[in-house]
Image (cartoon, rainbow, N blue to C red; front, side, top):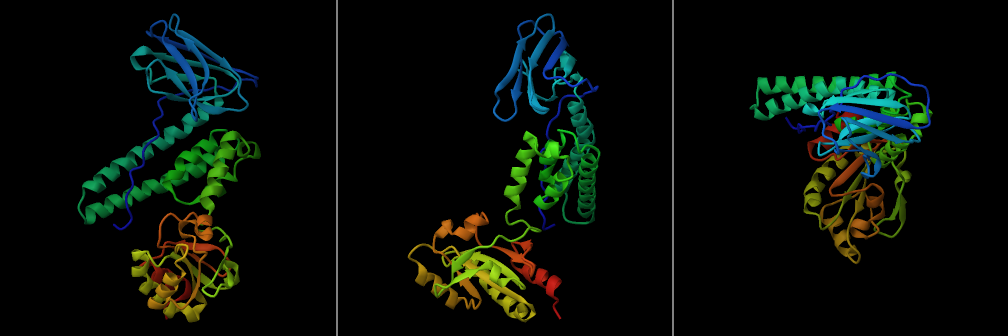
Length: 368
């Protein structure tokens, strides 16, 4: 199986919950009762981003009380003594936490509708992820053959159910402050910021502009750069004669934007494949735009590599090495790297090398 099977690490949610809607308040109170817990044990609410203490108290007669004010519902760590932190969705309401010292990780929570939404999701999601991880374990132990293929099929069936669960949650909870969290933690299951943005845009405006919503929007915007399905960002660099060339000047054609360099051995090894596909498809509205990450003062090495490898398409470079402005724009971390832009200026594929390049061009342009 060419595609790697990844073990997705399950977010561990310890807090089972039942919740009831309370009237809107301007502050929260978390009252806890944990039978058997010793007096003096410290209980804290911590910000999950920076571990800043929101509120704290010590156990007295099995009880504690935490108070504060929130701008909006959000997720926090509840830390009891030396136990592992537990997620607790806070909102300005009266919240009760009930448990036993024999199992501090198994708490019942009442009074937070946001936490109720959170638990509703994890009760659906966690079993799916546990099953997926079990299949991954079996797949990794299996040799090639029918059994392995069957396990892989079952794995991807569960992955499809995860996607359905995400869509269902967003559809049913567009006004929940938990929804951005759900979209964030599940984004590891698909490398598609466009799909993530579509799901995000289905949330109510108040949720999209919440702290968690704005954090997620920033994450989406960052990962959309150069993503399949997005508009290619224009750039301009000088060609081998010093003439400025813009990516947008190729609008109306399929163009493979190919990042490479004369010093890059894997790039030079891939160049014959790019040449072969260029020659095969150049009469079918296809071309290549080479972008070199050659170093300052190495213009001659760049030109010599172009000639030696017979790269007859347009080549540009600002000769700034890894600081090449186009490479910075598209956050190129390694080369060779490429993406394919359609005639309308949208990115339709990335990292097409070897046979994958010809297969994609045949799919789009035909091989007859």
